[in-house]
Length: 465
Image: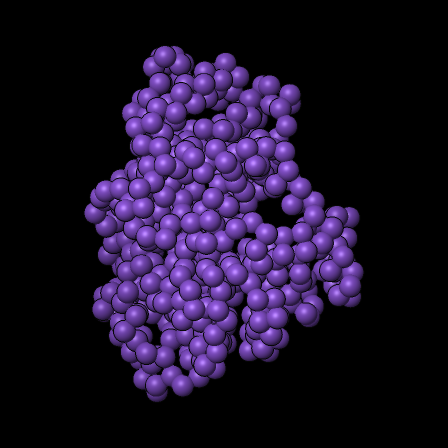
């Protein structure tokens, strides 16, 4: 372990006053990065631009696109090579449609060509090396983001969407966090800089939930945010005990939100749920407004395309995005690995931002039936929805079949496991070998997420997800 790693571990295991002080020092530092400098100017500009027409927003996108392409052609070795191989010049790439002349950018390319993707003048610009806590597929070793894109631009966009949910900066919130901030009780900390109660997503079980609920009740958050799987663990604990913790809104992100989860969260927190989508690479973001007609794509920051996806539902494809503000390491036609479709029409709220629908998980989370037909998580969720007694579960595909891990509800009917097996057999076919295991809990990833399905065929025997 590195010196930094040993120091971090020591802080996480330290007595509560030391952990609290360290968390708040870090919290004040983050708040300065997020909200100082250009934040207010960007936020006010976004408040105005969301009401512009789709045509006006697209014209602005293409103005930025021309600047980005010109910069990439003169400053980024990878794009110089790509464009010259295709006999392209910046004048050939001036519209959204022109982007299709360029190849897709993948995580493998980012890992293999890091130096070639970095702009030659990157050293003269304020930027940061960033990594994500991704949980599926190829993992990025690192990438560069301009400081403003990483901090004030990102958070101005977030808080514009939070305002759609009725939450304003300065209000109290609770964040069920995937980041590690403690390894010992209590599993909550108060970040005074943002009036934010941090709750560890890694420590949610029957032993810790009563004290976590008490901390939430004492904090009285106006917004509760986090990954759906973590939030529903708390919500189920509340509903099973006939309790509610009323809030102004629930803000979900990081995982696919399923309708049964939305209903459970709305019951437990007595408010609407607002789902969002994004990624650490900052190539695209989309959020629900109060009409819940779909997900408004942040057109001011990126261009989105929907690439057809194999055997997926009609209209659903992979989101491919081009960041319009990353000039230190341009992400042009980047494969996000996430699935969605374009909405049939504009949102009834009147905003001009493009609208996505059917955000249906990640390509990496799809598995195959014995005949090779791709099965998305939403199909598995839908098939199991009629089985009573399932608290949570995970389906793993291995070389020799499938492993279905299930956590049963306390009052689960005696036939729950058999009924789940029959539902999966109907989906995968009678020839599928499905081993069903009752477990105490489904493990979370290092980022605090729970994977509904997992293709483990490429992993070593005995290695878990």
